[in-house]
Image 1 (cartoon, helix red, strand yellow):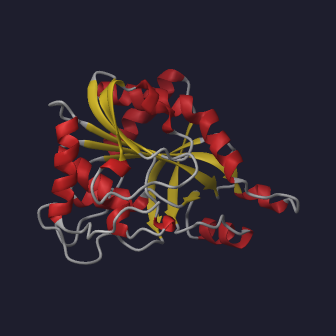
Image 2 (cartoon, rainbow, N blue to C red):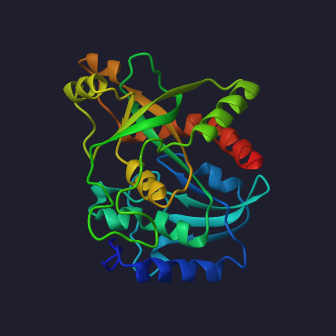
Length: 281
């Protein structure tokens, strides 16, 4: 079901949504925003004193329809910090415009988050990757429409924001240190964002690898661009749920249900890492 379509590039729409959520937050102020991707929503179950706000209750908000995305904001405590988590994101391929896709991030900015953590399920284009690997996103390639096209929201950021370091180096170093302490192996790589909803052809996998991408997915980058527009430090992580070299098998198909299962299998490691990072902020 689609929400009533409104112009989500208007600041008053963003402020009205934030005001509604703020009323439900019982005076709490979130420090960290978290976006939980396909099959990765279980971290939300560990948020205590939680207030659950379905997107469908927020005026003008898009509704998540993708597999593995419940479509809730969850506000509560995690690792001693107040967080606001998106239990499921909005995708461009669902038929929403980029203003709607990124509205939840604008709202979290309005609510005062100081950091944004994003996660996704991705296909591994790097031939050394395996299903279940965790990849810290070090950089990205955007092959979707840029969410900043159109009138600039001056109160949120400049017309031409710098994207030299879209993923915060200090957060990447912190994650690597914690992973070393916990015995979690992390890949580092470049994520390429495409519109979907088709999974990639073998030729597309080869092309993405040739332009420097280690993983490919259908989300995340619009959210990161909007966060960086507002100078919010971002940490990103992909769970590798399928791999390019598997397409060499003539009987191989990319199965959405299996991708969610693979994401679930890696979710505990990612959750442990996120929780410790939030504790140390």
